[in-house]
Each structure stands twice: as structure tokens, then as C-alpha cells.
Image 1 (cartoon, rainbow, N blue to C red):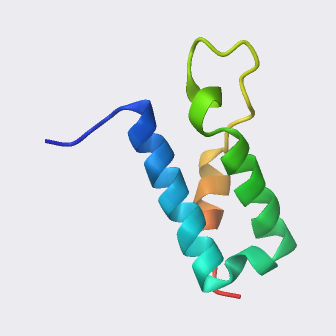
Image 2 (spheres, rainbow, N blue to C red; image 1 turned 135 degrees about the horizontal axis):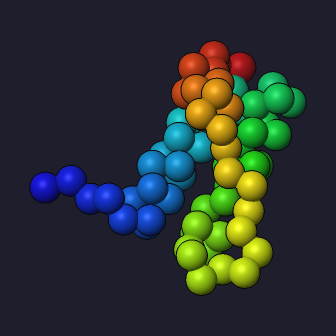
Length: 71
């Protein structure tokens, strides 16, 4: 049974960030900026009760992170 909660989305984002850092892709300034943007949208910022929602990644930006080559 798959999970569709906000915490699961946070986990998937965390997993992506870990993969990027482990592979060294974070050394690219553009990738690093996207990682920071993604991290700012995690946890409390994803909740609907938050009065200061963060800027979310676009689908193109997410694809850029997923396809980032190791540094």
C-alpha cells in the first residue's frame, strides 16, 4: 500500500538530496541552488497551515535535479 502523505513527499525529497550530495552533484552551483530551494520547501513549509509557504520547484527544475550528473 503506497503512502501519499506530505511526510512521504519530504522523505522522497530528502532521498533525492542525499543522492545528489553523495554523488558530488552539489558542487555545481546551479544544482546547489536547486537543492537549497528544494530543502526550503520541505517539512513545515509544505503544510497548508503555514502562513509563509515556500517557493516550490517546478517540474523542469525537479527533472534537472533527478538527471544531474555526478560532480
